[in-house]
Length: 156
Image 1: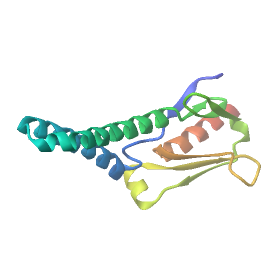
Image 2: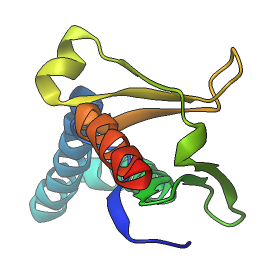
Image 3: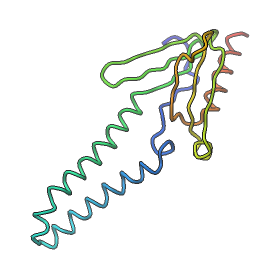
Image 4: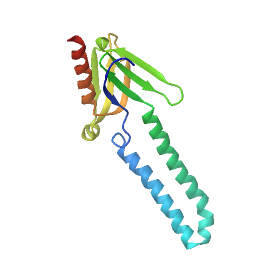
């Protein structure tokens, strides 16, 4: 990727979906604590519930791990000459747009998203449809400002 990196970000996990994030953390913690309490009491209930607790605990961990890897596998990078959107875990899909072709940056934020500082960004070029849409990006107005700054640096 040519040029100096002006801005780089990945989608947010907690700020984008705080209730789901807290729910998964509480599920993992409650199931883990429940398993150890039942284990300490050494009752027959432990043998009946332990497979269920272990499976639910594992599912919570897998969901959070998948969510984390998915957010880290998506990135928006703004350099002094182009804007690059990458996504994918094993296979990568990269879209690079020259900054001189970016015509508009549309930011969509609901009420909760505005409070938490996340939003959906649409980058448009000459066509009617956006070139790409990125959801759950932290501080979308900083991204718009970075694109504007890079375009001004490019035109000077």
